[in-house]
Length: 122
Ligand SMILES: [Zn+2]
Image 1 (cartoon, rainbow, N blue to C red):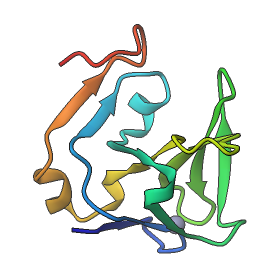
Image 2 (image 1 turned 120 degrees about the horizontal axis):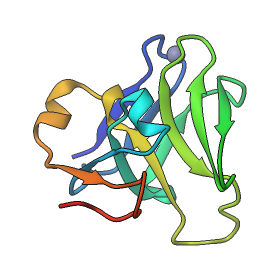
Image 3 (image 1 turned 60 degrees about the vertical axis):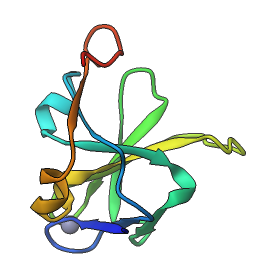
C-alpha cells in the first residue's frame, strides 16, 4: 500500500510505493532536535512533490546529505544524499511524522544510535 506524507502547509509532499518494514528514531544531535521518525528507502521508490525552491537544505557535519526543510512551514520533510550520482542503491529518508498518524502506529520503531555507534540498538 502506498503511503503519503506532506508538510503542514502542503507545499512539500512525498509518496512511497509501499510502507517501510520499520521506522527509525535516531538519537544524533540533529534528529533528536527535530523529532523525526524516518523511513529509509531507495531513492527510486520515492515520489517527491515539491517545487525546487520549496525547501531549503540543511547540510551538516560530514556534508554527505541534506536535510530538507519547507521554506513556508518549517517542517523537516526528508533527507537526501548530496551526490547520489548513478548509485542505484542510493538511499534517502522521509519523515514519517508527515504522514497520517495511523501509518506510524502500524510500524515497529527501531532506535538508531546515530550519536555514537551508527548501529541500531535493537
Ligand atoms: Zn510546508
